[in-house]
Image (cartoon, rainbow, N blue to C red; front, top):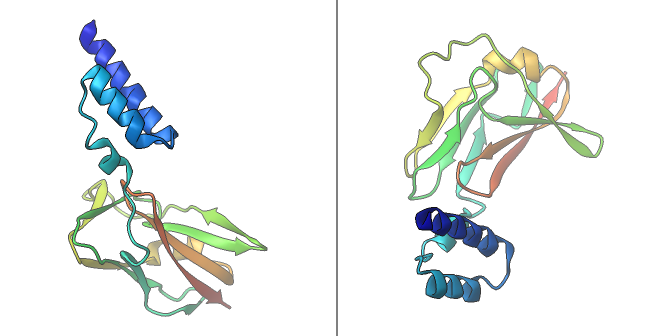
Length: 167
């Protein structure tokens, strides 16, 4: 029973550390009164990458409807990064500009995902590329402004690149 109580207190402490601005003082009190080492909690929760850590590269900035869109993701860090693989959905988040707002687009393609891993892993400084060809007729079928967005697992930042589809 005492072990469960310590686990619950530790969980509450993590929540409180995230929620309160007096992180250092609260962490010190929890460590002294409960005897739980929280020295790594701040490191686990403070995961941001610099704005240039991930680069999205497109073959061009303007494409005609139906033209194949090639892209690459460059990890510019010395750390391994992970992107969730949502196959058969599009490999990256796609948005279409409607008026003043970005609308998230989703589509599934007829692709074989059986051999795909659940995560796409990029080693330090690794570059990987592909094409949106299987999703083009489903997602990129209207002229206008589009945005590709990449979310890296475990990090708060998002990285994006805009481009245009023309008739």
